[in-house]
Image 1 (spheres, one colour):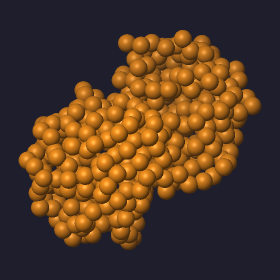
Image 2 (cartoon, rainbow, N blue to C red; image 1 turned 30 degrees about the vertical axis):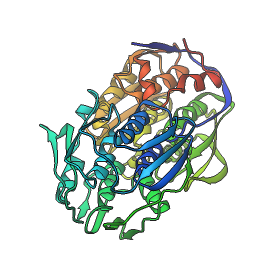
Image 3 (tube, rainbow, N blue to C red; image 1 turned 60 degrees about the horizontal axis):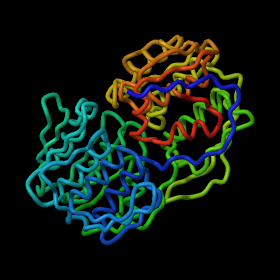
Amino acid sequence: MQRVKIEPAIGLTGRLTAPADKSITHRALMLAAVSDGPVRIGRPLAAADTGATLAAIRACGVRVEGDLGGDLFVHGRGLRGLVAPPALDCMNAGTLMRLFTGILVGQGGDRVVLDGDESLRGRPMLRVAKPLREMGARIWTAPGGTPPLVVGCGDALHGVEHDLAVASAQVKSAILLAGLYAEGETWVREPAPSRDHTERMLEAAGVSLLRAGGAVGIRGPISGLRLPDLDVPGDPSSAAYAIVAGVLRGDPEVRIDGVNLNPARIGLIDVLRRMGADIQITNQREVAGEPAGDVIARRSDQLDATVVDTREVPSLIDELPLVALVGALARGVTEVRGAEELRVKETDRIETVVTALRGLGAEIEGRADGFIVRGTGSIRGGSMVASGDHRLAMLGGVAGLASTEGVSVGGFEAVEVSYPGFLADMRSIGVVAA
């Protein structure tokens, strides 16, 4: 187990480029695999999760030239041209398991067993299996609705209307992808907007989506799609750690270039600004059909508590641990509600975040759907473990630079899942770590 200690920082400054977006990389690889003809994907994220998706499409007979992190040339086999293997290893990638299931149900063959590591085996899959079963797909899970997932191929699918109890981009995407192969109209309605990368990419590939009353739908089956060449923009969930580092210790500023500014992904920036953070966005542009720009964060010595409610949660679900940290350093009581989805991430992220931050001196209490943090203006620091969760490992890194004694993070290798260059980027802006 790798242990890294991050020392307290007085002033951080520098400029870095946000790592490529993990969500968009996953989707680009999958849609390129079923595209009519070759697709160039520029700057796809090189990480363990996206590596699992690349391995999966190759296992389905897709020829791919190049490597993650550079240019990839994916020679698509058409919408129904994948050769489904007996089994696929999804490793820790829940996005791969859920979204690719929506594609596999439309392929020929018998069935595919999708499995993963111990962490993925604990994540709920009935939320995908149930709606796809309603469409006519054959899908089995382990007892309790967790992986392994057995997916039948080649079934006759029909469109239905789905009302999701919890806003989830992964579940919505799986349903829409299955809708490509289903007879009739498939509709998805969410209680709050979730990230829309799949919808944007499908439309870029020539698919006409339906929209009415806040719901999104598709009329299938479609004959084919053609994903255009694209460059992957920067991941706001990864950039969030440098943004918060800048808000807490940026002097004169920390600049992160090329961040995806999709409105469904930048709830953290809105929340931090509400708390009094000095954050600016410059050089706004479009990258791969997504809004992007450069984010500048400067030290904000007076931060005030806030409340994050249910409707805001989907736009910053992965950044809520950082809200807890900033809340501990703010004035007043910060509360997060409606985030029960954190219970079924790589870990029970409410429990692990509360345990970790409390161990570092924060006054934080967990709730069934979130947490309450009483800000004291500082945290002591100490030792914590990442528990195999990449976002918890990076949270420890930012907590260390904002602490009085530094933070030692055990299991730091978990960052490889989404942000292998995290430590190097933090060091480039002045963070001391050993």
